[in-house]
Image (cartoon, rainbow, N blue to C red; front, side, top):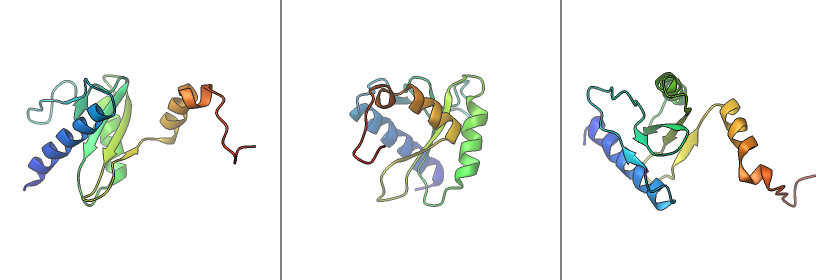
Length: 118
C-alpha cells in the first residue's frame, strides 16, 4: 500500500473512531491536490482542525506546524491525531492550546478532585 492510500485509510479509520465516540458528523474531507479550502483531513469535531497521520515514523514537530499553518484560515485549534501500526490513537497539540481546552472543560469546571490532588 502506498503512503497516499495509507493516509486515506488512516483518515477513514480516525473518522470511524470519532463516530464510535459519539461525534456522528465526523467525516474525511475530499482533498484535491492537497487543498480543499478546509485543509483539515477530517471535519466534524467542533472547533478543532484535525490533521491525521497514520505512519510508523512521524516528525511530530513538522506535523504540528502543518496543522497550525493549515488552521489559520478557520481559526480552529490545530491538533495532530496519529498512530502507528498496532498502537492506540494519540493526540498532539501545543501546550497553550491544551491548557485553553482544559480550562474550558467539564473536568476542570466540575471541581473534580482525584485522591492525589491537594
